[in-house]
Structure formats: C-alpha cells, structure tokens
Length: 223
Image (tube, rainbow, N blue to C red):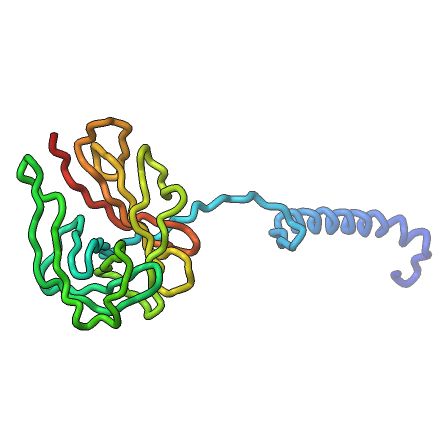
C-alpha cells in the first residue's frame, strides 16, 4: 500500500488487476496441463495390437529306411554305399551300420520307387532286433533312441495320409521325428483321387510340443 493511501482506495485501484492476473495464470496452467503428455500407468487403457507369431522355418535331412531281415531292407529316397545310420527298434538303439550295397527298384515306367539296401552289422551291439527295425540317417540320435508305434492322426490330416515312422531321438518316449505318406498331385497337397500322380512323403520335426513340417519327398506314380 502506498503512503497516504487508505485500504479502500488501494483495493479499488489494484484489486481488479490482481484478479485479472490470477485468472490469466489459471488459464495458462490449464492449457499447459492439457498439452503435457499423460503418463501411462498400470491402469491406463490402450489399444491392443495382436502380433502374429512368425514360426521359424525348419529343415531336416532325416531319412528312415526299413529293415525286413537282419541286414536287408529298403529306402524310399536315394541312398549311397558307405552312408552310415543307426539301427533302432521299439526296444532301443543297436548302434551304427554302414550301407554295403544298394540296388534301385524301378516301376513299369522305368522310374526308381525304392532302393534296396544291405547293411554292415559288424558294429552293432546286438543283431536281435525286431523284424520292423529301421535305419535312421541324417538325424542325431542319443543312446536311448528308439522307434515308436505310428499311432494317431497325421499332423496335417490330409486325405488318406498315414503315419509310417515315428522316432524318439532321446529316449523320453515322445516322438521327435515323424514320416507320413499320402497320395498327391502336387508336393504337399493331398488328393482324394484314386489315381494320384505322385506319392508324397513328409518329414516332420517336433518343435516346442508342435509337429513342424520339414521336408516333402515325392515318388511319381506309374499306371
């Protein structure tokens, strides 16, 4: 308050200015609060964006050949003399066996459909394995590896698709490699046709409790 000025006069002269300043400050504060970004807390709501999980591509060189005698069997894909696999049945792993001889079996069209093999059994821990034993190539197997019964539906469940082989590669009694077969006109596409142009063989790998497709092999059909 200035000297010689009473309270009433001071209020009349300066009171309105103070009120105006206070109002202006209030408006500025409100604008600043509106412009400032809001911090998101646990209770803040936002738009949920679903991100599709892209599964990794899998590949496999696993190749399963069947034995119908102690040292005689056949393969569905081409095999070479000197290739080494492991002999398995549903009781266990019998060790390493090398291919001693290979002969192609051709159909009426002259196309190879199977490869007959003879294996060297000299390194096996036993020759007392089941008649439906297999020789597995191109896949790492533990000492407790074994074959499992081909039960249940095939992963893709195509028309006429059947499971031919299931391999447990570590002895936990759960399948790690699977081979399925079905008639197809294009690789990977099953067909209900009674005269498909090919037979498809799919190799599947178990990955995090899911069967993942790893490879398709084809054999042309001859009629």
